Image 1 (tube, rainbow, N blue to C red):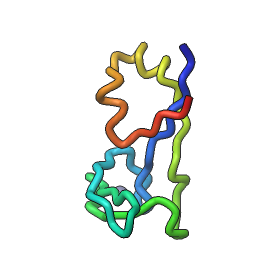
Image 2 (cartoon, rainbow, N blue to C red):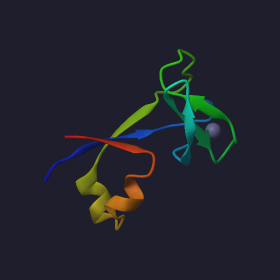
Image 3 (tube, helix red, strand yellow):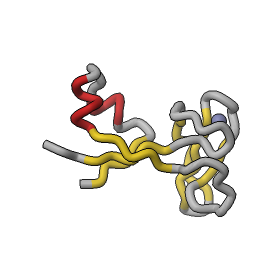
Length: 77
Ligand SMILES: [Zn+2]
C-alpha cells in the first residue's frame, strides 16, 4: 500500500489546520483554523504551496487514522 495524498495548506500562513467552509461559485472554500482566513484553490494568490504531498503509510505508522487524515486531504491513487 503506497497511496500518495495531497494535504491542503493555508494560503496565508501555511498551516495544515484547514476546515471546509462551504462551496462558493462551485468551488470548495476552506477556512484556516490558525489565522481564520478563508481561501479557495486556484484563485492565483498562493503565497505558500497549496499542496503538500505526503504518504499515507507514513501517517499510519505515526498513529493517525485515515478518517482523521482525510479531513481536508485529497487522496490521489
Ligand atoms: Zn492560515
